[in-house]
Image (cartoon, rainbow, N blue to C red; front, side):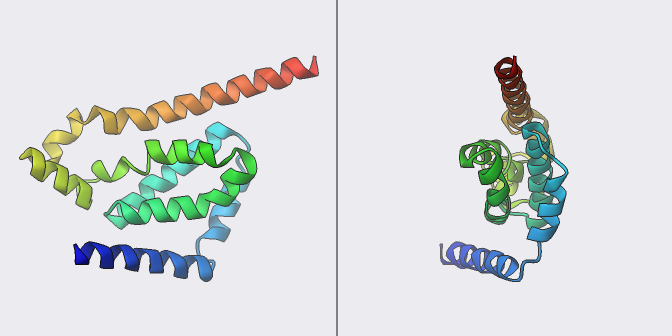
Length: 152
């Protein structure tokens, strides 16, 4: 248990250094500037989360990095609730998909089969990110229709 607490503390410190030194945020801000739609921002958040998960190989660092890095943009444009929805459907699940992630290794150990064998059957891990994209498309379409109706 102490190792996990130490790891969480180090992950938080690492994220604090990245924020304090402003290493990642300018790149994310520039990347997010070109997108003005909920669907586009959902896709970009999903993609960034997946890439962070590939590098981090754990569940903690992607949650911290994604949440803290994307929060200003999402709060300004859509609200914290939308970011929480997207992160809940992506950031929380992607570590179960990445074979070298601690979460995937733990799941395969519990089930007693190799990771590569359970991944095709882990439908929840694959379907939820797709559904969150669909929800963003539907919300964006409804908002566009409401704006058009208000204009007319």
